[in-house]
Image (tube, rainbow, N blue to C red; front, side, top):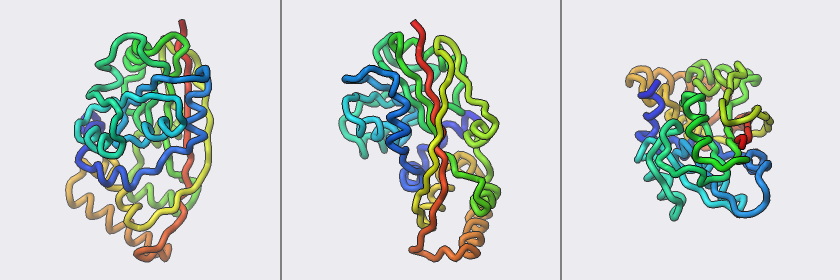
Length: 246
């Protein structure tokens, strides 16, 4: 599990190309409990900065990006110059006490130990601060998407969301949840990049990577997705938020 959790740096290009952006309304909802005004936000497991940029786009926020992988942070700085970056994990944040109003994790909470991470994030947040968790998950209610998932294998995130197993601990209160359904227009190349950005494939033997690529191409041929053509990938964005107690 640790190897998979820290494997993404070798596929920063695929991650940036293949992974979708976060809907602005979902990111705004994560921070909604905070009063208006300037907000200090920590993006934990920031990766290439997709959630960092979504928070910055809301305005009135400064973001500190944290990731265990220096390669991911290099990619983030290249896409988002000027953002403070530090190497760390949700369980060990190299940050002072009570310095942030919110902490957000995009596609990341399934990699953490929730009790230890909740305590450490709670240390960094001020009383009344918000912990926001968000995932973009392919909508497997669509038949061809189910088949694609079977070819690529499911992910820990998908399993956590499907089983309603998202949990946080003290000092945070109850989790609120909200979901958004939307579609992303994707090319064949972007679909392959999405698959290559997943920890299962990054850490898989070459023969398994080839098997998955061949299976995907066979499915795309069946769907009539030619090179340069596009299809609409249905997504569900699942967002959760909890407020730190006093």
